[in-house]
Image 1 (spheres, one colour):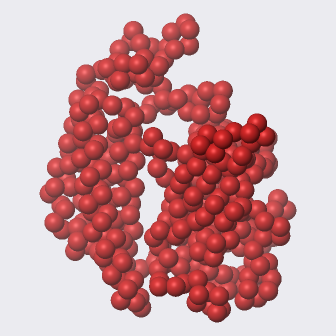
Image 2 (tube, helix red, strand yellow; image 1 turned 90 degrees about the vertical axis):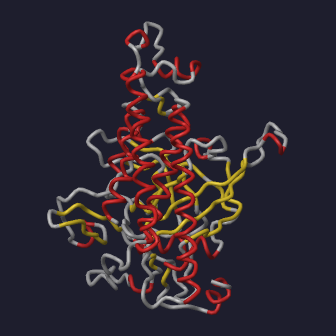
Image 3 (tube, rainbow, N blue to C red; image 1 turned 30 degrees about the vertical axis):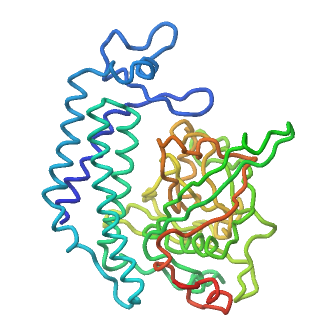
Length: 405
């Protein structure tokens, strides 16, 4: 089964479409596709590129040879899926010590993701046949997303155990929620009325979906999903903030921040402000290993680089005070500009816990590029993964919030 996943993962080969790209004045990436186009469409004196030509020519400027290669990759993905799809259901794992309802949801999720992957691959094939750049990139992302969901459902045992506490500090990790797997949180956001008196039908609104990754940051991800489930983020506005970058270039990075409310979330069990430690998965020589706590406060020092980077577009992190890396609470963030256009974004790696990614790029109703100060989170729904959330201590209010789960 691992071989099947690896072969289908050849979808990543379609990244040949994206090229290196370039950044415009608005901090957005424009795909530079001149390397796949005829020489006559290279960057001209007026600053135009193959991307500009493709917008009007619907991809006709990409060479026939390059499109043939892309179509071949898509056809190979389809052939691999058709050959292996009957064996996929046998790869589903049921985690021990889970309820019958949880196991049923897991089976239903697996079956649905198989169908969605099939549909996404079909749409990808169709997009390459039509030689549509935007649709090819969109359905590539969707296919990889569903493939990732299937891979997560094949993991039988969580790969490591988060620490219960930090002996060097008073922080008690065991009392924090933990997410042993992935989850999806759907945020319904809307633009707030402006001073110019814009009408309601002129204001943007819609959903964004965040895939929260408990495999790389179980404590931070668990805290985030716990607050989503509690409704903590409902009716809170998005704000802008600048933080210092630890990169060689220095400077500041502009963020869009959500979840800011007074002093943060007060845990009803302890009656105190919740403190979430810095949590960074690092690439050690013997394998990936999670590190907890801020180095200068805990004596943890390592030269191993962070496994995840904020240079990845749409990455979501957990914000903490500048002078207290182990004091994260409810605030989360993403970069205001496209991460590929922010040279100092790498300076956030290892400084803030990366908890997930906003998905759904390339869709016509994609609201993410517009989200900024002036928007408000109306409501949040944990669409999947609540079964992966573990609370060490449960109060009466938690039982009410859990409902039918």
